[in-house]
Each structure stands twice: as C-alpha cells, then as structure tokens.
Image (cartoon, rainbow, N blue to C red; front, side, top):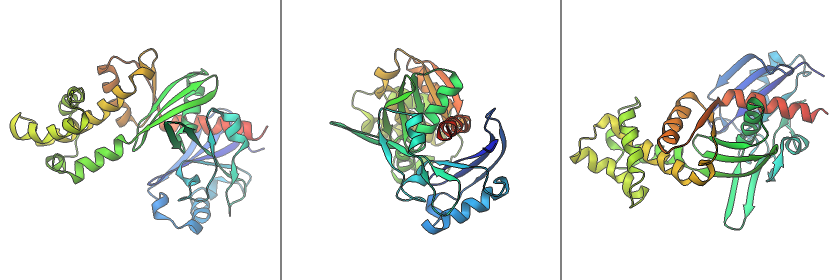
Length: 299
C-alpha cells in the first residue's frame, strides 16, 4: 500500500489536487486550475487528470480519490448517489473505478428522497465527514457555503440529512442580470456596511423578493452607495438563508466549511442572528475526508 494518496476535488469550474501523506494527513504538494467540468469533453478527463498529477503517481502505485461534480452525468462518469443516512464506510464501499486511469476512484454523492424533500449533493459529503475528523467528534451541524450552499446534519458518524440553498447562484444572477444589481457591477470590493444593511433587510416582513428590490430603492432615495449595493444583496440572501435554517442551529454551534472569504460572511450573518461558529477551510476538510475514506476503502 502506498504511503501517499492523491485527493482531488473537481467541480464545475475548478480542479484542485493534493498529494497527501496518508498517515498524518499532511499536504505535501498541491495543484489548482480553472479546468472544471465545463472546459473538458468526457473523453478528456483521464488524460487531463494524468497530466496534472502523473508526476506524483509513482507509476500508478499512488491511488487517486476524486470527489465533486466529476462524478456526475456531466463529469468523468456518473457515480451513484447513496440515500441518507450514510456513513463514510458506505461511501468507501461504493467508490467507482475511474474509466481510463488505473488506481483512480470516484466517490459517490448523496441524495435525500422523501415526501416533501428531495435533494442531492456531490463533494460536500466528503468535506462534512472531514470536518468531523478535524473536530474529533461524531455529530454536528455543518454549513458549506458556495454557489449552492449545503446545511448538513451529522449524527453518530452518519450524514443523516441536508438542505441546499441556491444563495451563491442567485447572488450572481441578481447582481449581474437585474436592475437592482446594476450599480454594483463595477464594484468588486466587499462592503461590510452594505452587507449588514442587507442582513437587517432580510427580516423585512414582505420577504426576500421585496428586500432584494430595496437595493434599488435605497440606492435612489436612502443613501445606499453604488459600491455598497453588492454587499447589500449578499446580506439579504445570506441573511435569509441563515434565518431559514434557524431551527437547525439555534441549539448548537455551526461548523463553517468553506473559503476564508465565504466563511467570514457566514460568520457575520450567524453571529448577527445569535448563532455560534467554528470555521474549517474547505481544503482541510476535503483532505481529511478523502483520507478517512481511503483508509476505509483499503480495509
């Protein structure tokens, strides 16, 4: 058995690869690119992957574990989505051999199929299990901010339920494709004052559809500066997301698993709403989760 493994998180717009010491979990080297699923044809996946990590593979002896949208119908090949509740051991038992590349394995996703609640995920399940490992616990609530944010319930080493919020995608759509977002298009810097105003607007009794439009009316008549409009829209959407999940977090801390930038926004929102937070980087959670899965796959 190799003393190393290669962990890859491959999504719609990004490729992240890490060479990892399987015993300590230490990242020995890493490589990132913008070659997400949208930039590759199906037959190009094995060749691209080998080109990026071939120098680490020791002739194929170092295994590769891939998570994320790479396992979707739009990716390398479609891996199954297991129904919750599911454990890391069950995920490990269901990994798929990646076609065209030896000793490479695609991790399955998860799904919820219930009356009144149907949901899917790919990649966040690995990060959720990794966060348990890093926090040395078996249960908890994770929030994974992103284009499609996930709120994940973990109980006794099982992922038991999750909910997706389209917050990031809606923010992009509103900012760049609506009239209220128009003043923000030339202002990339984050404005915390606007963000906090958006959080307060998220509680408007007429709901988020009105609160989002207030970016327009406040810009015209209440002094909301153009450079603050983007922050305001973000505050409305993240504030609504956090408030919608209040029943899940009001009696427990939330583990935020994401980039530094997104974690900081969700920390502000959760603390504004009365919640408590522990932060973990998405890279660290991915490495810990894939290392834990690899140990189970080989036993």
